[in-house]
Every structure is written in C-alpha cells, then in structure tokens.
Length: 192
Image (cartoon, rainbow, N blue to C red; front, side, top):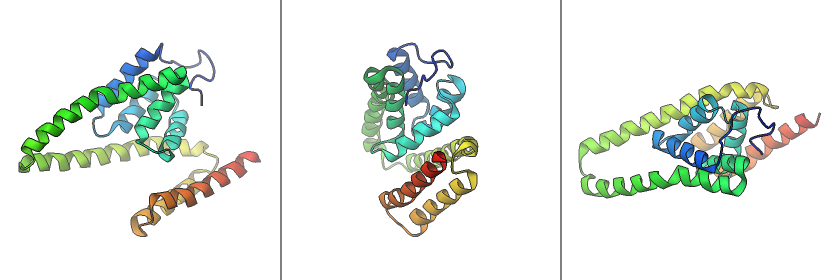
C-alpha cells in the first residue's frame, strides 16, 4: 500500500531522514509500548496516515512474523520512499533503543535482586497493558467502515479471545482459522 495515494492530499515526511527521526522519536517516547505512541504521532499529530490506513497497516503487521511495530515501520517507510524508507524507518525505530536496552540489561544483571526493581517492572507492565487497551478503544471507531461491520468484528475478536485465553489454542491456529474466515467474509462482501 502506498501511503501517499493522492499527492499533496495529506502531510508526508519530506525525506527518509525525517522518517528516521520520527521513528526514533516514537521508539524513545513509547519505550515498552510503542504502538499507542505510534498511533498518536502518525495519525493525530503528524497526520501521515488516516486512522483507517493505520489500522490496515497494523492488521497486516500483526500477521507478519516479527514485532508488530517494526513491521508497521517497515510498511510506512516503504509506502513513502520504497526500500530506502523501509530501512530508514526500521533503523530509526531500533538504533537508539537497542543501545538503551543493552545498557539496561547490564544494569539489570547488577541489580536484579532489588525488590524495588521488581515492583517497578510490574508497574511498567500494567502501564503497557493500559496503553494497548486505550489504543484499541481509540481505533475501534474504524470498525464502523469495515466491510464486516462492527458486530461481526467484535464477534470474531471474542472468538479469538476465547480460543486463545480459555481454550489455549496456539495463536497460529487461531489466525489460520478465524483470520482465513474473516478474510473470506470480507472478500465476499467487497465483491458485492
């Protein structure tokens, strides 16, 4: 998907370097939970993507192997500047955070026995979960224009939740079954 479908219709990064710094900024703001920050920055602040484009790119990113946000950055960069943009976005997202993680890993190995550190990490996990839920709530409005419609989308999400959390099915099986069914249903409704 090309991000700039109608030239001049929406703002866009001027060059791969601007995309690199934007992705670097995303990674540093959302340390441990970049998705919520990415949605706010790319859709609401920079307006490089519409909500619908963001949800579409995120959906594709989630079914590809690898971290969702890295896949999203690759798609965003490729959509604007091809292979150069994909490399710039990915490098921006990973370079400085990688250095920070290496430093934190060295520090953690030194202070892992501290109870205060364990409590801080549990608290950060709760914050990250809250950010994911808040992002999902913000993006739920895009389901109104989805070819499947809001009730069917919510039903499929509920089935996925039951299959994974309660029945303990592997994610690959759930994506294979429910994902294939959702794609087939959407395809048939779009064909009409």
